[in-house]
Length: 412
Image (cartoon, rainbow, N blue to C red):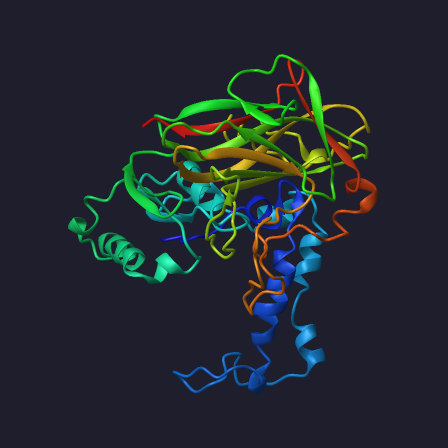
C-alpha cells in the first residue's frame, strides 16, 4: 500500500492536536461532503467523462438527506478524550504487516505528516519505506517524481518485478532549504547520526541558549496575543535540522487550563520570518506542536525523548499560579539554515498567524482564508471556553525550571 500524505491516529493526527479540538473536519464535511452526498442528484456536478451526476441519479429532499447522514463535527466534539470512538478509527500498528511506501509532507502540519512517520517507525512490516517531500498536498503525487516512485513500488509488489525497486533507499528525503530541496538517501528514521541538542529557553532577552540558564525568571503572555518568542543566535555556517522535535516547558496559568501552541520558526538576517509552501498554506512555519495543559499525562511506554506520547484519557486541571512541567510533541520537520539565519521557538495561546503580508489566500473547497495554518485551526469556543483559556500564561526558565527545545541537528 502507498499511504501518500495520510493520517492514521484519529485523535492525535486528525481531530485533537495535543488534546485541542481541530475544527477542520466540521468545515471539511460541510464544504466537501454535503455538496455531493448521495441524494443530491441533479443538483450535483456532472462528470464530464460519464455525463452522469457525481452524487448519483437519485434526488432527495433536504430533510431526507439530513436523515441519512451523521453530524461529523458534533460526533468528534462529543468525544474530547481518546476513547473507543477514536481507537476504532485509528491504525493498530501491530497489525500492519504488508509492504508499504509512506510518503509525508514537511508542510503537512495539522494532518498530512505525523501519521506517515508513525507508520514507518511503529508498524511491524519488515518491508516499509519512507519518503518525505514538500510543496502542495497534490503536487508530488501527480508529477513525474511521485508517479514514478509509485509505479516502481507497485511493479515490485503487485507484479513481482524485483528490479523495479531494488535500489530504492529505505528513507528518501527531500531535505528542505530556504529556497528549494536537496534529495538525500538515508537508512532510518530518525537519522542515527542526529546530534540531539537541547536549547534552553532564557526569559532574560528571550533567547534560546545552548547551555542551561543560570538565573530564574519567566516570560508572560496574554493568550489572545502573539505569545513569546525565544531566538537562537544566528548560525555562522550552514546548519541542518531534520527530524522530530519536542519542547519541555514549565508553565503556569491564571486559569485552570492552558492551550500551548508551540511554533518553530526561521528568521533571515534582516529579521524577516521565512515561511514555506505547506501542503495547503503558502505561509507555513518550520513546524508546529500543540498541547492542552490538562492533557499533560504521558504514556511512558510509548513516549520517546523526541516524541512524547500523551494518553489523553485523564484530564488534570491546573491550579492557577502553580508551575507544571509539560512535554510538547512538535511534528517532524527539515530545514537547512544558511549563515546569518536564526532558529526560533514561539509559545502562544492560539493558532499561529504569519505576521507578514498575506493577501486573500483561500481555496473554494475550504471556508477560511489561509493565514499560516491552512484549514487546520483550533478556534471552537465550545472547546476553548474563555473562563479556561482566556488569561495569562507564564513560561518559567532557570535552574528549577529548565524549559528547553530538543532539536535534531544533522552534522555536516
